[in-house]
Image 1 (cartoon, rainbow, N blue to C red):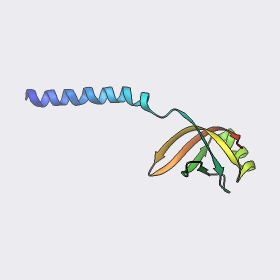
Image 2: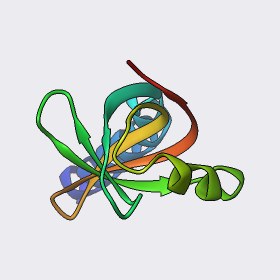
Image 3: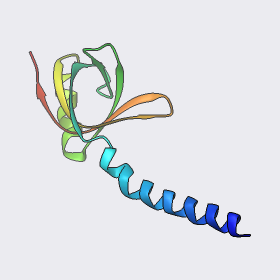
Image 4: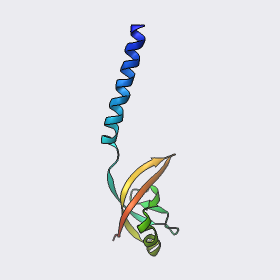
Length: 95
């Protein structure tokens, strides 16, 4: 009985610390340089990775003006269901 209680308490403590520490190691802001595809929803980065762009509301209309051009997107990058994604909140044209 004591062993089971010890393991349960240990598991709860571990979960508690992971909940606190994992956000510390979460991805921060990144800048990704690449070429917008013709739909404005994708970016071919300089390292060869393809990213799906989730633009902020105020940025969405602006991206369509620069289809096929080199841009620098600033946002949070992550992998979802095996796809590289970036939630972008700003961009600028790149050379």
